[in-house]
Image (cartoon, rainbow, N blue to C red; front, side, top):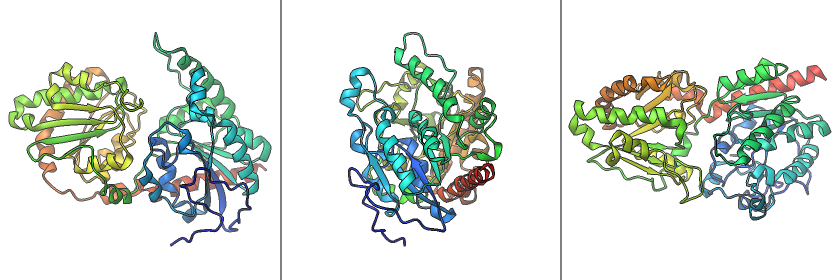
Length: 457
């Protein structure tokens, strides 16, 4: 058991600061400053890589410090249970931010913009006072990533970027979209190359992201890039067992649950699923009558303001009575427990071939049958093809809807059979996707970055 260090304060404090005391430096470990504006208790998807890794960094030679933004300064929902999943002796520095009430007057809500000055000052002090060896940005708040170059110019400390989503995009704003989205796209298009000019390494959830970055910035070496998917902390399911799920299991129904974002990008997968349910009526009317599909947390809008994107497609397919959609997001452990109590779990993929099924490992760990609908070139396909508990159908274009729906409809009786069983954990399949295994891969990348930096010095 790791003891509580005297220089670490509770992460429950509003503003934990390391700036007023020297930090002892373990000689055997390098120190990494992790920048993650979203962090527990904030319930946001982009903080889970770091949250799951914190307990393992020291095992692989790296001593972490987290730099984040005080949860009270952010509008995102919080889940206090998340704090209990992290080690107590990792220093967490929580900065302030310009109040949202002020920045909204000029149309700015992004926490990386509101906290930029705070993060810049705190990060520079930590790098210097704690003798940081490497900075790691793990967030989808891209506008804080240029700080890596700013700090490097002042301290010579290298930085690594974690691309959980593409940064600069060629996507063009739709007609009628707010002008600020077009402006944001242009800003990202300038800041990404400026930042990458001095980046020392890149982690990404999809190999396609790495290919794109190296094509744009060939000076980034292949050996300082790594594809690291999202993993799972198996102990999270034990914590989730203490909370109430967002659904109730009905023995008279066969209920499938999807937890995550919806939207137009998921339209092809949803059309395949709903067409399969309609076809099932002809194959097995009794099973079709029992089938229910629950979609939870499909919109990132504030509570009560989400737009339904799933139910309209169900209505289009004529299966309205069998589909429910809750747009409001739920707490992380509620999401896990909802999957655990479902008869089967749904994985709905994007039309984008680069889409990485971020919930693949948690779905496998839920020990429930999985119905997965993914683009044929999605990185998640290779993993799910190995799972004996997964029914996987793939597509490339909207022209594949009928074929894929027919395949899925024929597979639903097997899904029902699996749903009646307590499935064996697919331990061997999951092991490379555990938090510890993926942290080992992160740290190996950090080591390669440091070796290359030492050689270039």
